[in-house]
Amino acid sequence: MGLVVQKYGGSSVSDAEGIKRVAKRIVEAKRNGNDVVVVVSAMGDTTDELIDLAEQVSPMPAGRELDMLLTAGERISMALLAMAIKNLGHKAQSFTGSQAGVITDSVHNKARIIDVTPGRIRTALDEDNIAIVAGFQGVSQRGKDITTLGRGGSDTTAVALAAALDAEVCEIYTDVDGVFTADPRVVTKARKIDWISFEDMLELAASGSKVLLHRCVEYARRYNIPIHVRSSYSGLRGTWVSSEPLVQKTQQQGDKKVEQAIISGVAHDTSEAKITVVGVPDKPGEAASIFRTIADSEINIDMIVQNVSAASTGLTDISFTLPKTEGRKAIEALKKNRSGIGYESLRYDDQIGKISLIGAGMKTNPGVTADFFTALSDAGVNIELISTSEIRISVVTRKDDVPEAVRAVHSAFGLDSDSDEAVVYGGTGR
Ligand code: ADP
Ligand code: ASP
Ligand code: MG
Image (cartoon, rainbow, N blue to C red):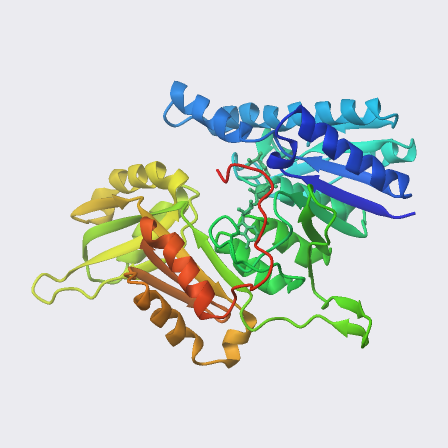
């Protein structure tokens, strides 16, 4: 008998009907002879609604209290799901992250899992229960405070539990049929990927493909846990994310390895903002003091660009991108340290978007970068920032240009499917 961990995202459990539908699927997995551990997200857009509510009472809510509030979302869905399963005649018990043994560091709103001690889950399984765990949350090792793992963090809970329980697979159930070559909400001709390596999936996730969270893929790679991303609405086989290529059985050739594509896909991200520090003296130590100020506020930045200084003034501008949710905090930290850094002014721009092309094949195909820029220029899209890695090229553009740019790049690299249109079964895309 195997152990499977299944994770259901918010759109899959957005109402009572959704919870009952998911309960049936879970019971089916149990009837097939598996031990089943389920990680569940908050219903629908509950987390966003709770954040809106918090912002109405305080513009910068305290991290500890925000975590207390947000974890309530997952507690609602875990209890309802356990009830629905019991109603189908199976034993089920729900657990908060803390009860499930998810131990984290103390960084509120984006805590990292440092240990998983799933003793109570094992006991529940031994007693023939289906164990339901609230995703996205844990308890800090030091302060014993309730923490959350950052937006989309239920994916990480699922993989961390799969690793701690030595599960055969971690199944991520969502509102699309798997990982596609682009977000199916933007590119209706996106193609489903049968298998993708951890490396390419890491880059896609880091570049904004929120179908899987970056930290979850990192965790899965570290513990070598295969992930199967699939729809909770269809019975179709989804996308396997693993270190070893998938082997598919074909009638003509017998076993056949699924090849990794040269280009895995196009990702986009409109959740970032750009801060420009204007009029910085062009001398050693300036960048260090700007980014030390940001790091001390525990803010992660993404892209950086420094302009050439005008010879007459000896001043330059430094721009960087960061999550919009951290924008206010970063501006305040920079203002506080203005005399220490010595800049003229700050500019904040949240109307930007990032488009990235990802694929391990880039390393050996020198024309890829030029083709990417040509596709953007043919679509009339202006580029503001550029960054590259061995297997990724990213550009920042105006936010309004993003959908058109993604479609243009997707077509230019021959990724458009000529058969089925990608199906989006639910969710609001929020
Ligand atoms: P869940 O609520 O199940 O966690 P998410 O909204 O976090 O679901 O993730 C699923 C969504 O990710 C899809 O509805 C889709 O719009 C988006 N998405 C972005 N990029 C991709 C991609 N490359 N493949 C599939 N889905 C993607
Ligand atoms: N409910 C949380 C969120 O919306 C966590 C998750 O869904 O994974 O970010
Ligand atoms: Mg998600």
